[in-house]
Image 1 (tube, rainbow, N blue to C red):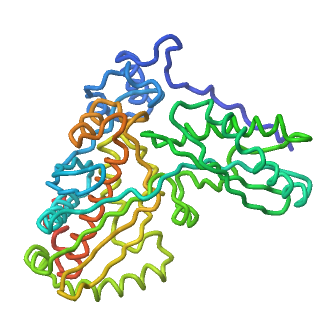
Image 2: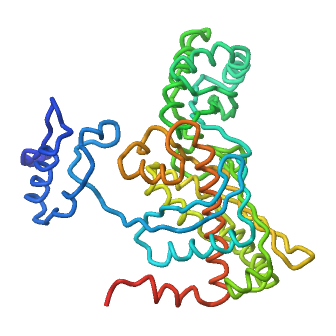
Length: 398
């Protein structure tokens, strides 16, 4: 019986132009190609104001755009170290009620004096792993890395103008030595920056360690685009706290909920989050962050890490309510990546957050927006208008 596979038809490749692939004409060719293969119309995909010539480094095989509606919420009053004042916030989403809900939370926070925000720590990681014959060699290697940190730092930082290597953490497993290179990355999110810098550091190690050293650039301890407990404890991106004192009268008037009810519900929901092993004991940080990320040119996959958070509350003696959320792994940038694209740049500029020196400001606004969403949805669940509001605003079908 023959095991030779049957001949396959020739692969029909996506059209490309080796000389200049980022043109309106090439985008049209690829749409026509996709339409011929799928039989579907791409009329709306092909309507855009972006100059294809600005897209190298952001996308390959460009054929059009996915248009996501942007709503406007606010004002949100932020009392931060970097973000100060009233902000009108662009939120890109297809989920009805989301903008209205965040808008309501922003009203509550603003009427109570605003949200206080603090960036308390920041670092970005790349985590290579080095392989040896046994654990003894791996342990000795760890001591050698510590002794040569200064030289490794020079090699890594030679690849970047703004990245700075803070420290290298060690984790031993059998004959393996996992290293976590920790950097500051200026106003960039920094994953690519730290990858390039860490490769240079690892190559220096391999060239200078006695007997050489075998390594993989990522041993998966950086948990890029994945939630992890180590990032909640040690910080990946920015660790940002948003906090506010909610006046009992304002909560009752705007949300229809008393602070005592809210505090009781918080104890219950904390138990649920504990039972589920959730990465956030709040309500829906991912909603606000995703809407902001799409509007403002962030890497949306970073929501997988950025939504992790810890809510902490106190029912104050006068009946008011202290509310905070700590985002432990908020990964944002205001320079590089998608921030320079036309619509995304406009949204960042609307917040005063485009370009160098603005990443901490944007992080504080993100945290404030998340807290606004927490207040509104928690109030809706307790008051009983969570489902009815979705029935009213969240359905676009007959």
